Length: 298
Image (tube, rainbow, N blue to C red):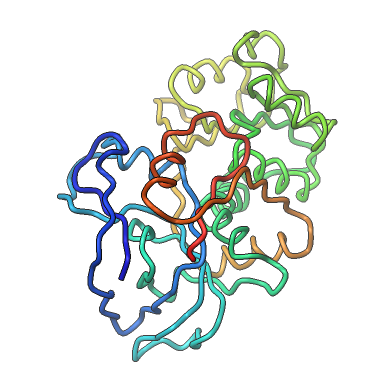
């Protein structure tokens, strides 16, 4: 099968087109023919070596799967050949076929596209789990989202609105602020490049930190004494701070995609291109993109 692997860690030059053997299914895995894959920040960091280098190349990168089941393992009970599914495995997604454990897989609703499902597999699933399993929002909470215009941040905003939260703040670039003014004009967004958010935002109950570095520590200045800060990127020594890791979960991804199908969650897609090494390199090199970059399999 056709795949794009990393022959080392480093720049996008490490990506290489290859022909590799089809995955051998384990009893509880399904074999998925890829239709679309998203470019997720995790995959970019992994390729660069920022997530560690314990795995020895060659490695197939990629963490979002969206396609059709073409085979199932002997012990698979939840899926059938021909079903449209999405999942977020750890790696292996930059290939025509991917073997994924059935517990990580979710059925794609009929009115959700493969491209939307690919964008949802990691990013939207992360936001859904963060809000429902870690943030525990009350409708009277005030919430600050750092990186609110990104894929995860925008989804956190929407899930928070579904939970009834009215007072929401965010930090974003000027471009992100203009987008959010049209998307949700009630959000008060601070330009992190021009202003100190700690001087513009009052004390808040909850903070979602998708940025890290000094943003995490600065945020403590405006977090209430009994507040909660959930970070996906940074752990610091404060009882109010929790580091969040998304654990791939098919049923939870399925719930999130049903909200996309109902029109409650919007998935912003910036650009779609054909899955090949040139486009993969270009998409990995793009920075500050508003919306998800998707590669479609021909």
